[in-house]
Image (cartoon, rainbow, N blue to C red; front, side, top):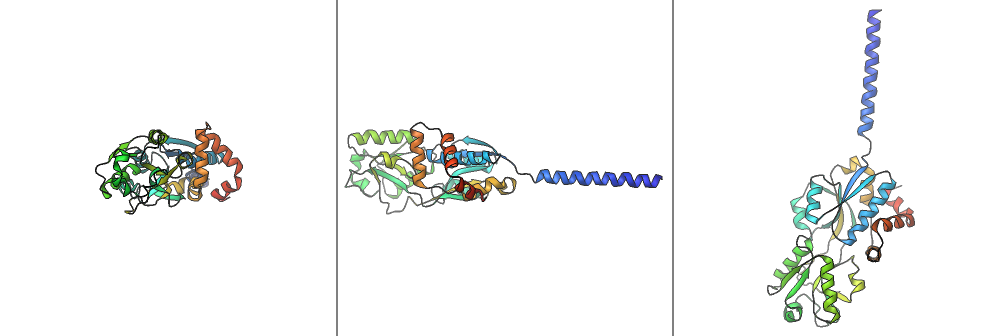
Amino acid sequence: MLILTIVTVLTACNGDQEESNDNNGSENNEEQKTISIGLDPYDYATVPAYLTKEILEQEGYEVNIEEGQVGILYEALANKEIEAFIDIWSPNLQSSYLEEYKGEFEVAGTLYSDMPIGVAVPTYMDHVNSIEDLIEYKDEFNEEVYAIDPGSGMAQTTEEMVEAYDMQDFEIKNSSTAAMLAQAESVMENEGGIVFNAWRPHPMFVRLDIKFLDDPENVWKLDDVQIGVTPDLKEQSPTAYTLFSNMKLTLDGVEEWIMALDEGKAPEELAKEWVEDNPDKVDEWLEK
């Protein structure tokens, strides 16, 4: 009877242990549904950030958007302080960051390819069509070229452009995007000369009568805009990883979004409207 009792107790204990192990395994396999997304200070980047937030919250996620400069967000992604950064320009514009943090994150998907980027001038400057022309007509530009934030890949490429085209007489005037475009509008009111960073998606090509300059030295190489994620995101949060892998955007659609932001709409409101209007696209991105 004593032996039978001991066997019974051991069997029960083993069963409890197996059940506990099964439960632990189940818990370990549960999807992590808290995620932080890095957002840099560019209007176009609000589109994938807030669309992702809206879609994943409808899938039961808790989503936080962490704002910061590009370099800070690369570091945060490498340190797993955020799970995703939705504005990686590869392989050229952000090459210094890509090299510095190589192997510390992975690319989940590409939002759009071959992004138009470079420097622009007003279209009324018929005689200026190439970056090379800036040197000949440098007095019309007050020997200045306007660029965005100093830590951005675009500002770094502007420095490379000045060197590649022997534009040492030009001073690079760095500022926020808003300040740069305000300066462009002010100069263009009097049909003056100004050259500045330009890219799409951005409504500057809707609001301003401007043109890209040809780049014979190919300083402004075309890039893809990608979503970087932590290496373990696919396993921990497969729904989020699937969304990041499949999301695709159009330049026209993003520019319409930015115009609506300027008219006073909130990004959360725009994201909600888009998701409601495009359920089939959302299902496609989630592979439902």
